[in-house]
Structures are given as structure tokens and as C-alpha cells.
Image (cartoon, rainbow, N blue to C red; front, side, top):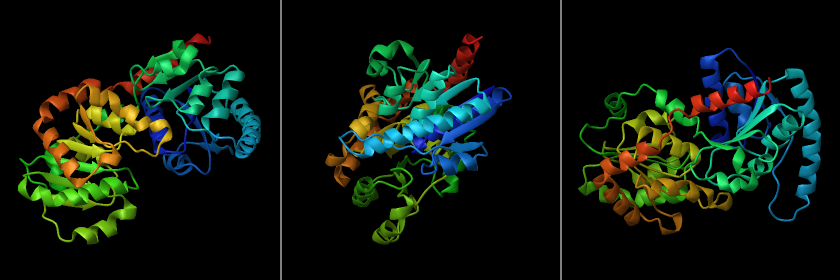
Length: 364
């Protein structure tokens, strides 16, 4: 298989793409070309993964009237010319986009040139680029049940797949006892893991700092991942902590310790939710209020409605509110875990590759 992949800006667009690529490589010989931007995270992450990478210059569309949109239009047209040459030289069997504005010129050009195309939408509420592309591509792969109607008359092109990131987590060989031992956590104590993304979330960090004194009268263990930027400040603020409360700036192999936990406190980005449901973990979700159209709260809704998660909005977040939510979740852990696992789609990467193969066969 020869495949061109495009997606970038944030890890939420890049890691599902990498999970899909690894599934293809696991199943068959393939050649991959990744098209991104030099300014997005993909430039570093994709190259580190050893995947051939080409860049284009493109920016996102402002939702308000702005002269920047004129510049974006010019960059789009220039990118179309470059993408056309890249596709002619590479001659892919299919072109796949996983979100972010870089996908716009790549998938648009591919569709206009007659290549088979698919876009993957990670969130419940689709981004502006994927909504634009839906009218041109052959298929739109969804991560959340019931989100197809957001594509309007192009809903017929949608198919529920899930997030490929879930498949990578499902394949991990995890020994919960060993993982807990790495951090010095005792067996028999409920373990809560809290993180707000790679850079941390100040509001979540502050609430956890306020909550920690209340843990003295519980038997809970806590792994508090602050984010690199906030670690030293919070470490100085908290001082010496008991062994059952561990502070870390960042964890590269986070899913390993997640599997050993009883409760997770986090944002509700699409990849995070894919991991939580695949592992069947109860969670307290605190959606970021700083994302487009509040899509993280929309993402969280399916988990909250089925009882897999509790929702705490950032404007309501305090140490006391978080402690109350933890108390409820620990008490209802078994039921929440079952509800979470029922939402998991651990075969997402395999199902996505199956759909790519179906589309490729249709062109012959």
C-alpha cells in the first residue's frame, strides 16, 4: 500500500495518524508520505517516528472577518500547487487526513485529482477543516456515535470507526502491580491519576493542591502530573508529601500507570477518552473551556450520560468540589468502570485500515 497521510497542529490529530500507520505496517508492506507543516508538532513527532515527511505552508481560517483570511487563501492556493506535485511524484493508493488545517489543501487536492480519500474526525463536534472536506472526500470516519449529523447532507459518507489511538493502548502488555510498584504505591489503596495534558492545566493543578490536605483522612494514593511548566512551583508549594502522593512533571508512558489506577482526573480530549474507555477507567472530566465550540464538553457528554464519568466544569472547580467527585467515583468505581469499558473501541485502528482497503478496491 502507498498512502499519504496529513494531520497536525496538536497531538490529538497526529497520534491517531501514527496509530493507523503502525497498524498498516503490522499487516502489510507499505510506503508512507506524511504531509504537515513545519510549525506544527507533526514536524518533530513524525520525523522522530522515522516517517518520510514533507511540509507545506498553510494557516487556519479565522472565524471572524480578518485580513489574515485573505493570506490564508493565498497560502491555500500555493499549497495546492505543491501538494499536486507531491501526489504526482508519490502516486498514493489513498490519501488520509486526521484533522487540523494542514489537511485542507492536501485532501482537497487529492480528491480533485481523483485519488481515494478519507478524513478521520476525533471529536464529537467536527472541526471546520473536516466539515469543509466532507463534501469532497470519499469517506468520513467518526470517533463518536451520533456525531454524523454535524456533516449535514454529507452524513451518508460517515462511518463509525473510533479513535485508532485506542488500539495502541489495547495492545499494551501491562502488569498493574509492577506499574504501581515503580512509583512506590502500596497495593490495596485506590490510586487516582490526575493530569491536564503535557503542559498541565493551571485550574486543575490548583484544585488538586487545595484537595491534597483532605486526602489525609482517606486511604487513597495520588499520582499528580503537573505539566513541565508548573512542576517546580507546585513542588515548592506542597513541600514534603507522604509516599502515597507522588508528584511528576510529565509521564511518557502514561497508559501503563493508567491501567493500574482506579480513577482518572483529566481534560476530555478525544485521544484521552479513547484511552480511558479502552482501559475501562472511571473518570472525572474537566473539559477545557478554551477550545473551539466547547468541543471537549461535547466529547465528554457520552461518557457522562452512560455513567462512565463525572463532569466538573472548570468554572465550578475547587478543591472541595473535586474531593466530593472523587469520593463519589471511588464509591461507584465498579459500575463506572463497566460503563466506560462498554464505550471502548479497541479495534478502531484495524477497522480503519479495513475501510481504507475497501476504498482502494473500489477504484479498480
